[in-house]
Structures are given as C-alpha cells and as structure tokens.
Picture 1 (cartoon, one colour):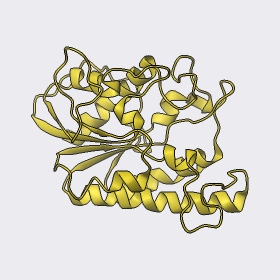
Picture 2: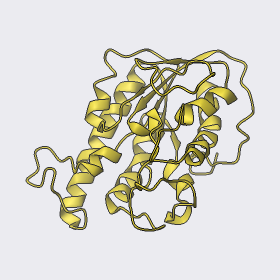
Picture 3: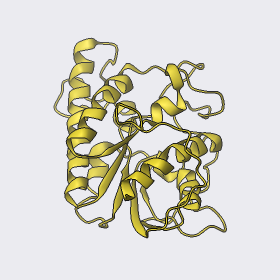
Picture 4: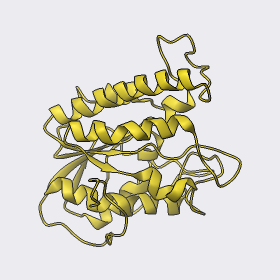
Length: 238
C-alpha cells in the first residue's frame, strides 16, 4: 500500500489466502469481461479466483464464465450506469467483500439527468463538466454508501481510461471523476484499486491493455487488472 492508501500493482497474483470469504463483483461490462472484438472468458474474475481459491463468488449471473474453471458468479451488466448498478444493492447478496466499478457509461452516455445538457453535454466546457462530475460523484457515493451499509468491505475502482485514436487517452470527465473517488472511498472505509493508473501509467495506455474500441481491456488488460485487485481483495478480507 502506498502512503496515500492506494494499492499498487506488483504483489504476485499466485499468493493464496486461507480464510473462506464471500465476494460480490458488481459493475458494468468490465466486471462482465467484455473485450473487443470478442469477450475475455471470465474477465478479471477468473484470474482473481485462481489466485484466491478461498473466495465464494455471489451474484445473479454466471454469464461469460471461463471454461473448465469453478463458477465465479457476478453482477456485471454491460452498458449500465452508476444509478443502474445501485439498484442491485437492496435485493443483492450480503457478501464479506464487494468489488464495485462503474462510471464509464455515465461518461459515454453523457448522463446528466436534470441538467439542460443531459445526454449532450460538452466535456470540454468547464462549467458543464464540473456539474456533470459533481452529479456523477454523488451517484458513485450513494452506491458505495449503500454497499458499506450491508456490512461488506468495499473495494472501488477508479474509472478506467476511455478514448480512441491513439495511445493517449485523456477524457477530462474521467479525470474529474477519478480526482474525487479517493475521498469517497475514504469516507466510507472502502479500499481503492487505481485501475486507471494501472492501465494507463502516466496518462498513456500501456501497449496491449485496451482493445480497438478504446474502452474495453484486452485479455492482457484484464490480467493486469486482476493482478492489481488480488492484494486489494486480500487486504479487504483481513
């Protein structure tokens, strides 16, 4: 763990934990394991499950499983925004650890209900972007708060990089959300996995981490995410 409380990659993914624990992974297509042009079977979940075999995976879906591997149930729903992910919590499982990611689809769909620029906002307009980020962070915090209230130890992702047309992925909306997420995590006792920095160190996506659509990780990218998550989840189980 760094001095800021964020976990950094580098801990070997093969280390095991002895204690049994339940885990609920919920989010959007990056929890499901969508890749471009074909999905990555098991996404990051398969590699984490392999490294942490004591985990029992909860959730409503068994879709996109890794062939021949034990079941890693989940609630990864492609295209879902933060407000849609939040609807899962009330009727969802009660897990020891909840790993939640979201926010990418809020940016992609320009989701700003109640604002005059709803679904058409200009992220390069400073005033519009500030309002958008504040609203999205409120939705993010409501989601994290509701998960923490279930008694789960929550692990949150930073929003992964989004962009097309070269190696430099720099959505200012994503940057603004990621600037606010650490404080949200701290307020609710959640652990932060900085997926954005891991996929795009220094703001530039490392070769082979994202597919051609500029949104979804490659199989290699999901392995990178898994190796980041393993020590964070282990810490959440402690």
